[in-house]
Image (cartoon, rainbow, N blue to C red; front, side, top):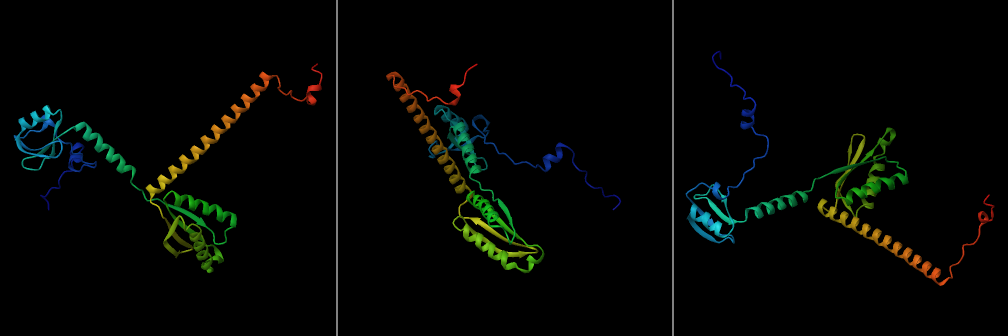
Length: 253
C-alpha cells in the first residue's frame, strides 16, 4: 500500500497519442513510397499479372503512364494495382460526397393543439403538419389538456383521429395516441423518405420557377407587341390623341 505508486497521467501530446479523439486516416502508399522487394501486381483492368519485383512493377507503371498503388498492404506479398491515382482519389471523394448528401437525418417536428381548438387554428396547424410531412419529417402531435378538460380524453382522441385522416395521403400513424400525464401524444410518419421528399420539393420549386419565368416572358412579349403596335400607328399617323382631362384645362400660370 505504502510503496505502490499510481501511474502518472500523460501530458500534452502524449495523451493525444495514447487516446486520439479524431478519425484515423489511412493513406495509400504510391510508387516509390512502396518499400518492399516484391508485390502481387494487378493490371489496370483487374487482370492478375502475378508476383513481380518492385522495380519491374514501377517500370510497368511508368511505361503505361499510370501509378503503382498499394491496395492491400497486409497481404504477403502486398497487392498493388496499376491505376490513375489522381482519378481514383477524385472518384472516391465524389462517392463520399454523394453518400453524405443521401444520408437522411431523422427529424421530429412537434405540433401542439388544444382539445377545443378553433376551426381556423386547426386548419393553420394542419397546414404546418402537411408541410412537415411533405419534407419527409416525422411529426409529434401533442394535445394539451387543462383543468376539467382532463376528464374528457375522448375529445383529444377524436381530434388526433381527425388529423390523421386529414393527412393520410402524406403520412401514417407511427405511434398511436397515448396519454402522457396531462397530454395526449401521437406520432405521424411520412410516406416518403427524406431523400425522396427532398427531390419532390426541388422539383416543385423548379416547376414554380419555370411557371414564373414563363409568365414574365409572356408579359414582356405582350408589352413588346403593344409597343410595336403603337409605333406602327405613329408611323401611319393614326395615333389616337389622349383625351383631355380636367387638369389639361387649367391655366399653367
